[in-house]
Image (cartoon, rainbow, N blue to C red; front, side, top):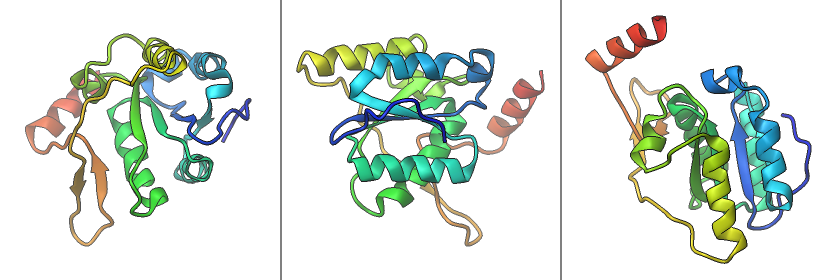
Length: 172
């Protein structure tokens, strides 16, 4: 995991950055810009492997972040939520901040997030720094398990034609 700041304190913002998401590969400086925006309000940790993700979430859990940001696409959101449920061990998760750093960003768009990751974070920081409540959209967290595997968590789930569509989409 990479970090340039030490800004995560009690109640801060912790952002998991997926440097492998399509948008983040095209714009590799996004994580650096997010860190600069956060300043002392939080930190950004890169997680491109399950081990890095586990370490990042452990750091954020220990720091008591009250907002967990995800900079990546829909797949990143799924992986981060699944790992966060394990890291928080049954305790309530912090608020989730979706930063649209993927290709389709279906989940982020579905909750009203527009623009890129920096714009979404800027709106949250303005509200926090001025003492305004954060805008929220409550969503049910899906728990999916099959064949005895550990459960996976996320906000969307698809099979059949959805999977075929996504395979064709990403092939082009």
